[in-house]
Image (tube, rainbow, N blue to C red; front, side, top):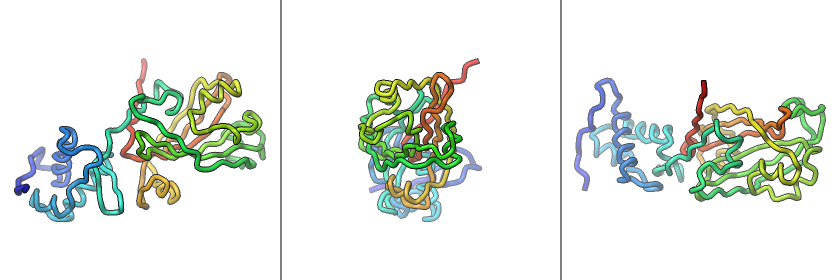
Amino acid sequence: VRTKRKVKMTSKNTPKYMRIKSELADEISRGDLRSHDRLPSERTLSERFSVSRATARQTLIQLEKEGLAYTKDRSNRFVAEPRVDYDLSTTISFFATGINRRREIQIKVESFETTTANLEESEALMVPPDSEIHKYSRICRLSNKLAFVEEEFVFAERFPDLQSQNLERPLIPFFEDVYGIRATHSRIAITMTGFPEHIAKTLELTPPCAGLLLEQTVLDVQDKPISVGHQYWRGDVAHFSGTIMR
């Protein structure tokens, strides 16, 4: 049975919920709380640290904001798996290298269509207006945990019969091997965003919710776009980093 105890102090100006969050984060770091363990309830935290339910609730929310926890079944929170490190400065795309070979990557195609590009899509791919494009969405799991949803489109003329191909694999090396189109670099932008309802549902999150949006254009040696895509990442899955050279 846990006994009541005071939260270890970090600073007099640090809110109580942040001090409790730091202590729980330490427990996760030490392994006292392991991946997918259920976190203490608001009531349990309230009694353990002699704080209000509102403070306990804010603690759990902060753990989730920092990617240390995730919500399931609306009210229960669990310890998140350690984040995978995605070094944006050393890889063209997440799928191109697998990033962390110790994690099993699973890709599932959710939808595919060939349609006419709108003005924004044709400009992004640098193709004539009203060109045909292939649009597809894929779901990625890491170690069987939902990680992100990718929505991407390519110029259909460059990739004939794409729908008949196996798209449940990394596409950058596939494009080179099958179509002779080699990716050499990419442009990436990352923002925090509120997820559309269909994205949240696919990632088994309860809306309204937020996560990371990675917008990426993959280019060839002639600086011509190969693909344009949006990846909606769960906030508790990845840590994005990069190396800046002088």
